[in-house]
Image 1 (cartoon, rainbow, N blue to C red):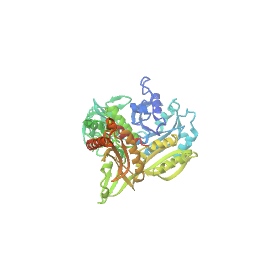
Image 2 (image 1 turned 90 degrees about the horizontal axis):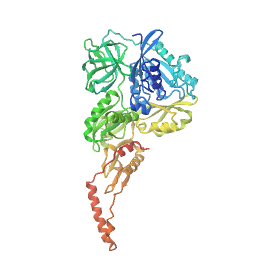
Image 3 (image 1 turned 180 degrees about the vertical axis):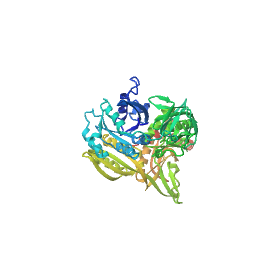
Amino acid sequence: MKNIRNFCIIAHIDHGKSTLADRLLETTKTLSERELQAQVLDNMDLEREKGITIKSHAIQMEYLYRGEKYILNLIDTPGHVDFSYEVSRAIASCEGALLIVDATQGIQAQTISNLYLALGHDLEIIPVINKIDMEAAMVDEVKDQIVDLLGCKHEEILAASGKTGQGVEEILEAIVERIPAPQGDENAPLQALIFDSVFNSFRGIIAYFRIFNGTIHQGEEVKFINTGSHYEADEIGVLKLKMHPRQELKAGDVGYIISGIKTSTDVKVGDTITSVANPSQTPIAGFEDVKPMVFAGIYPVESDQYEDLRTSLEKLQLNDASLTYDPESSLALGFGFRCGFLGLLHMEIIQERLYREFDMDVITTVPNVSYKVYTTKGEVLDVHNPSGLPEPTLIDHIEEPYIQAQVITKADYLGNVIKLCIDKRGTLRNQTFVTQDRVELNFEMPLSEIVFDFYDKLKSISRGYASFDYHQTGYKPSKLAKLDILLNGEPVDALSSLIYHEHAYDFGRKMCEKLKELIPRQQFDIAIQAAIGAKIIARETVKAVRKDVTAKCYGGDISRKRKLLEKQKKGKKRMRQVGNVEVPQEAFLAVLKMD
């Protein structure tokens, strides 16, 4: 066990984690020349297209150091704030972490928040400056920033380049020298923490785990502590780029188990595996339960695909434990699910994965956050969906979730960033100059304000230099209004939203204008109205497609023309009573892209 090192790589998005991981794999000759490709651990098409890591991947390397063979288990992590749950899982299974900072950009918000996660688990941190081969690299300045942040010595910081491979040997030596070997007893009862799982249509569910105590053998009967299910370990092994079966795995190892599990509810990420013959009574304290931040309804385009969608979501949840879902129904869209996501990027990725991996076309409703509603009877309700709101007369007050937001930006963009946050109902708590031209701002603001387009706006006003990170702090009372959209006097529940009362009028007016462009014209006038309660605050009309019925009247009395027009009017009125309005799919999506 003394020759095993388990470590992960943490950094802000785009600081070169995956490229550096490629160099580590190349240097340790884990992969043959043929298998090597750029960002080899990002094996989803989606990750390659977007250039981001979505899943944390585990891979085992062998490294010869001073004549001894060491086993290095690397878990690569994502950098985007929406996938911080993946990071917390990787950190729970490691003893050390490489903290990577881009030499051209310096320390950013996500670097700091991931670092705090790692320090909370007592990991040994190895600071690495990456991209030192770039012309814009500011190696000495960034070293000073790291020293300020970590309180380490200058000579402890390693300089490397993921592109050219410079400094990679030093990193591998530092991993062996500085990161402690795993602690654990091979003879104690088995305790293994599941940190990930995937669904394979031939072999069932494959769970990835890290053993803290004990030994697991192939063919042994194992038990999942939380769910209480018993299974036989058909195959166990270690993860290189492909799976490599082994006869036994001991404390400190990272590996996988295949036991023909078909029901996805039996495997929970964060659960503990133990053996039936010599069981451990205590589960390992896993990572904290994830709290979804953003909620949206996901509905199948064809109503008979509801069961397929449920199965697809179950399989996706195996691979992404931060996704939550509950069944719900809507008048406009039929049966679907209310899903909880960690953020808008997470929502977009899930939608895309449903389409690519399971061939599911879905409609997504307006994303919103979860509110606490206090009724006059003294009850507290959690409301994720505007249609779940009680009658206005029964509501005492509504509380909405608040977050602590941390923005790091260049001093030149300070004014614009503060203005953006204050427009979004933020309160500036403090600002500190990290270096001469970099400022860290701390805001308290409502979560609902950052759900829509906050991140995009922040990136555009700071020309990409501002980095953003947040965590939820609690709930505060707020004045919210339920905004309904009516078509021909009928409310469309999928378009209704809970919104801060001062923004309601502008939002309602824009919604009506947008829907007017998107809803096709019918044989009758369609009234599009935005309403708060019984009060209409905005209206647009989609004009009817009309036939010129007076064309056949040439000359003669006006009453002949009027008679024909009246007849047409009656027909239109009758049509309006029985006609229904089709809301196209673009209308639901347009609401998300409202500026």
